[in-house]
Length: 394
Ligand code: PLP
Image (cartoon, rainbow, N blue to C red; front, side):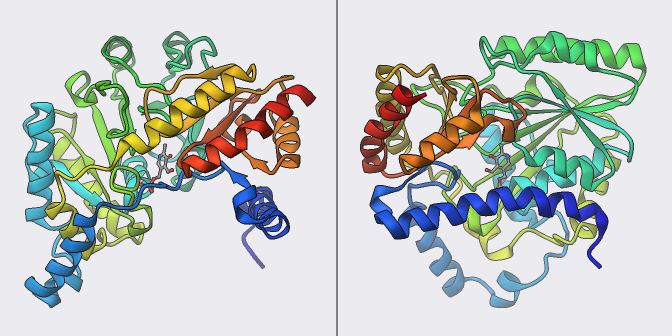
């Protein structure tokens, strides 16, 4: 018999599977080009050619046993971690070394390693609604519990006042995500300073550490030259979870890293615990060929102009049609108020126009929908009459 604890996931998953199946059914019936699938955060810009070249070069030039072997350390290749540390230092003026970096199987594994490293079963992690739905599952994986801080629907910046009220002697961490999935907002310096101030004060008051887990797969996707402040500079008890899934369009390769600053409390133990968590959670080490690849491509970037063009066209089209949208400063998602207020009803109506979007309920924030605009430009343009019709019908 399948574990009872998995059955709620199985039941929850049927909604997601139904959406995929519906997309496939619509594509078959109306033709793929006539279905506007905005449901997935899968990059639409191909990985830079340098990535493919680097993979070929590594296979030709480097020791095959090493390239395909287990890593000596579960934290990853020492030289790769040093390249990553120096890269962050160059961009952020920080002072990291390989000691501060642990290579991970994408941000998803980084988050799991971070939670297992920092939280004991029964402890709580806070996240700001709307948030990436897997956070709750990741917390549960380790016997921890996620508590949602209700959204500030004026700005969709973290609701720090409510967070302050929700912190208890059981709170061990706060997850933040900027640029944000699903809203596209970027947390500015003032927000981070205030967040740090509150957490410092709460640490003092409660006499225990409260960590920030900063989930940053969209760090490089910031438009109009917007800066994305580096969280460790504001709060030393921060663990950064980075990923190349979106920044180099490598989501299937499963590669990212954790940053644990030397200044964080209990650094030596935390680094060892994270190294061991990487092993015992079954990741063992981040994929070796791709570790070596990202080290060679450390200065490569994706073509953000493609997403930017989609962003502007979608925003203009939707606002012209009467939608109330957050103009995204980063990532590749548009966060839109569901006309009529019922996000699920809106998604169902949109589907009648071959438009697939995700209800805000999936991000602990009903009443809104997420449109992932990492799609072809034609998909954006051709979907706009459908969005207009849905607005009229709602
Ligand atoms: N965090 C957020 C906010 C995401 O949107 C995603 C993926 O979409 C992840 C984490 C997981 O990313 P990765 O592919 O690096 O595991």
